[in-house]
Image (cartoon, rainbow, N blue to C red; front, side, top):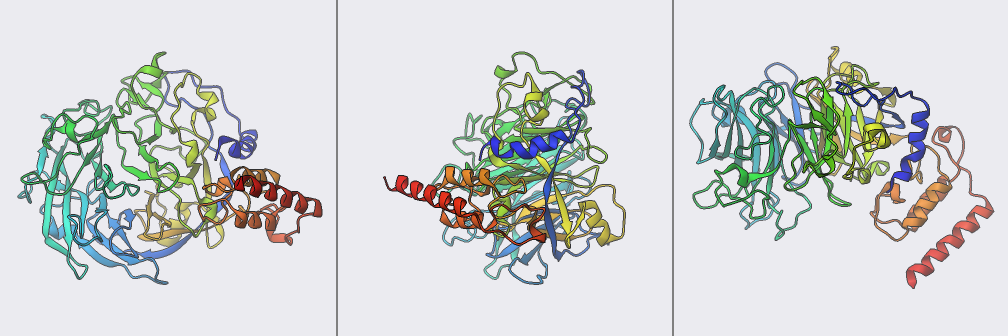
Length: 578
């Protein structure tokens, strides 16, 4: 999958939008670039409704698999975890764990509450130390009750002192599938100075196999503690954990509640109470979501919410310093939270790791954009047209757009001197995906309003991946878990997703024949290989346009085209046999 596969759709998009001259810096809106829309759309289908909490719709925060086979687990930020069977026609949510009663002084509200869930990769492997163990990230009222276990404790700057504590806890599941709440133990306490930018997602690398260094290592997303411009300079301070991603082995190690991985990049000892030993990457503001691509290069992708100007997608790199609060996106912070400036001339050697995609807060979207939320790279089987696309979104100020970008376009660039040459400053060529519900085009905000009868000002969009590998869409307003079930506007064989099945798509298939790949490589049936079956799918749609497909029959390729295809396939087959 290369950038050339996206050229046509983006040239068309750029012909229809007018880009103003680059803003004079320092400025709040440094890019002045519109975000294009794809011509195709995704259908969202209701799957299950989660019960209300506190007499309100649940605040759905996350969805994951990894526990009992076939079950998806949904987090209500107010403290409950529900499970449901993804294979059931009309699944019923079942309470898996209620942290409001199991955790002393559990606290929710704003960005506090239940934020993350991760099952140990050995959860289903009897005889291992991780058998039936899972982990949660959540909040407790500071000094609100006894410690549970022997956690490592990191305080907060004083003043202002601790607003609340961010916690990582371990639980064990009984043989009958219920949670043994008496097994709960706390691994880690981090004092938070403010009510926001605290602990968020936790997770294991699904690509790591037993015996490999990253197997069983828990990644922990921690914000910078809140406040404008990181007032205590925590994200650049390795002596404390805020503004960082931590990485630990969460299993108990003798008297210690967890152990320090020997390959952590800043480690100087095995002491879990020394923050730098736990830090895997730093310089992050509120990087509340991350994901690992489970195919391709296995990239780790981190989304970081910006302050006044830039939303970021970053590659997860051990030892990386993502720059906050000295950098915001590919720009220099100025001390004014509402503006950024050009990078210094030596930015190519300044030691910071810059984003692989970004957008700013004032653009062509409704009400602009101020808060990115990461999703996942699609690796399911139900919607092969999405294979290899990273889905992410904007959740705080507008209609809840979902964006998509080819994961192979998310790579590190070195020189940001002329951003207009890098997809108008966005770095990677992403675009907005139109949504449908019941076949009718709607925004996510409209879909939510149809359910609630209320006009919400924001979607609070979240994503999850179930045990079926499919991507689910959540929000904090209507309690409905939805799944992406189909795509309109992309025909079989349309490798570049431009709406036409043509010779360019065949050449893509030809170039990758016999190799592993995904949709934009010519793998149209999500088998993981580009092969003869994919050619048959292309051939069946050859000459068709998605815009006309519903109004005319599928033509047969001409005799000349068929002969040409046969000759090229035969040639390829001979090459593979040599």
